[in-house]
Length: 66
Image (tube, rainbow, N blue to C red):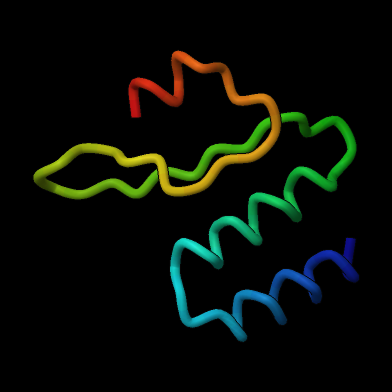
């Protein structure tokens, strides 16, 4: 687990793009045992929630509603 935390910290620290960083984080989360799907949302005051990154077999209806 410490290696995973280190890898995430290195990648997030080197990223200068929020979307790229979230896709990288999603990839690392999927590498954990028993995790099949990830979805990361950004929430704004005016627009509600926007899906910014996902991984795995996210159901189509979730992708359409975001």
